[in-house]
Structures are given as structure tokens and as C-alpha cells.
Image (cartoon, rainbow, N blue to C red; front, side, top):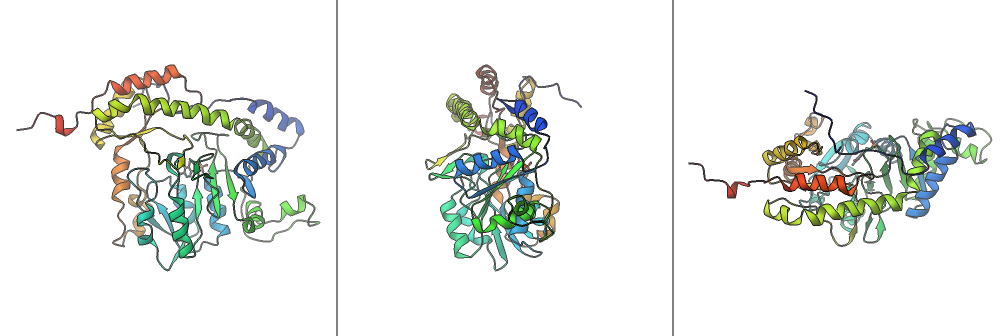
Length: 392
Ligand SMILES: *Cc1c(COP(=O)(O)O)cnc(C)c1O
């Protein structure tokens, strides 16, 4: 069963600068719980760069979404709209509070929540909309925010892919009331497991601190605003150790280099594969002109599931690991409990899920490694049905 170890992995995390020095510094300080020097440095960097009033580092993006669910008082029977084509956390953080998840279909070009069909999913019970900036390309936030506003519901941006990307000049993750970030190993910037919550609405900041600290006002205590800290609300343990924050800061401070290197790799894939893609009826990613993407992934849309599988196999035989992506959440086993309404279809999500393939793409990837991938990709012929011998 075990596949040969790929020569070129799909993803590989490496240290890029001072990560290990900072971990040593955190250890030497004798203070490695949360909210110490390096957590604060990470938060400050995010706040200053993204120009958002408050950023809190968390144990994961999933946990940042859980804080959002608590903060917005999501309750049983509330409806939360999420795209079907996303990671399970976008939905499960709200399902955990008993919410009913309403799945929206995606656009066939950007693979983002289809804002033109969003209104169809809104009901009197809608309490929240959670767009995901897929691959770090911005959703049509002007429309999404306008629709949300019209119905009086907040927007939480699941910006796990989109840190440092922009939509019409605005940072992704800063347009909704809240934005969530992931520093999981598969993301552009990582500490293995970690996340952040962007509090774009200042009014939510104080309660967010409380929820993140087990429902206590410990943050106010540390600021000297109260003389003891106590239990004041519900909450959980979402604070990240400063050992991890130290690693994270070593990566975060390198963000301009990381994004630049990824943009170069992405650009090479896009330009070198152009004619091969056209000849083989493969679709390359589409990035609207008004979006500065975050260079999170490089994917291709193959003509069919069958061809996609053969393509992954073809690369595997050449020592290259390419992978598919999300299975549509609306078809998941857990979502079957809600599969009663007639407006439950997400045909684009289903179609894309069958056809998408992601190529190796990581910060330390060399041009030589990428050339090897490119060569292997272009040695594959799709033989779309139009060019096959007619069967008789
Ligand atoms: C990675 C990811 C998450 C979860 O991130 P964690 O930090 O692993 O919890 C959530 N949403 C999307 C879209 C993701 O890609």
C-alpha cells in the first residue's frame, strides 16, 4: 500500500530565518505560556500591517472560528451560510454551537462563494455569512457585504488562505466584522499549528479576549485594569504557547520575502503551462484584476475526474506528489441531517471537486524542482473525448 516517498513533496515546511533563535529566546526568558513577548510581537505585526484594531493569536484557525461563533452568540437553529467547497472547519466551528449550516455554491472561475446566488440562501433565520477566499483570491466582498448589510447579518471571513492578499486595495480578512487566519503547516506562513483572529470591529475586542482566556478577564488583569481576574463569561482555552508564537514570529517577519517567492513560483507555473493547458482543455486559475492574490496555491482544473486521477498517477510515477482538494461539504455524511431542502444543490462545487488538482508549491521550492514538475506535467496528454477515436 505504501507509495514510494515522493522526490518532490506537495508541501514542505522549513525555517526561513530566526525561528529557532526566537524559540531559544522564549525558553531563556522562562516564560513560555501564552501572551508573552512573541505572541505580542505577532499580534502587533498583524495589527500594524493589516491596519486592524486588534489581532489575537490562537491555537488554530478552527479555534478562531469557534471564538467567532461564541462572540456572535450563534445558537441552535441559527443558520450560517458557508461555501460547500471549503475545509470542514468553516462549517464545524458553527455546527458545534448547534447552528444549521446552509451551503452555498461557488463561482466556476474563482471557486469562491457565488455572490450572485447568495440571496437565495438567506432566510429569516440567517445569522452569519462566512466567505472563504479560496487560494487567497478575494471573494466579491462588495456584493457580499452589501447583501449581509441589507439583511442585518455579520460577515466572518475565513481567511485561512488569504493572509496578505487584497480585494480592491483592502486586506483580505479585514472587511468582515471578524477575520480568521491559519498558521497550519500547509499555509504560506506557519508554526505547525496556529491561527489568529482579526477583530475588525473594535467593539468585539474585549469579549473576544475573555472568550479566548477561558471566560476570564485575565487580559484586563495583566493590563492593570482590574486587581484580580475572575470568571465573567463562557469561553475556552484558545491561547497559543509563546514557544510556538516565537517560531511564528520568525516566519511572520519574513512575510514580504515569502509572498514574493511564492508569486515567482506561481507566475512560472501560470506562464509556462499556458499553451499546454490550452491544448489539453485544462483550466488555469483565474484571478480578477481587482484582486491581489495571496499566492496560497497553484491548481489546475482537469477536463474530468477520470483524467484528473490519471494525471495524479502520472506525476506520482515521476516522484511528484500532486493532490486533489475539498470534497463538497454539502455531500458529507454529517451534512446529510440537513439534506431535506430542495435548495441544497451545489453543482459547481461538485464539478470542481472532481476536476481540481494542486501542484507542489512551497516556500523553499527551487526553480529546478519546479522545472521537474513542469516537465512531468507537460508530458501528460489529456486526450479529451473530442480527440479520441470514435468508439463503434
Ligand atoms: C486550513 C484551513 C482551516 C483550518 O485551519 P487550522 O489552523 O488547521 O484550524 C480553515 N479554513 C480553511 C479554508 C483552511 O484552509
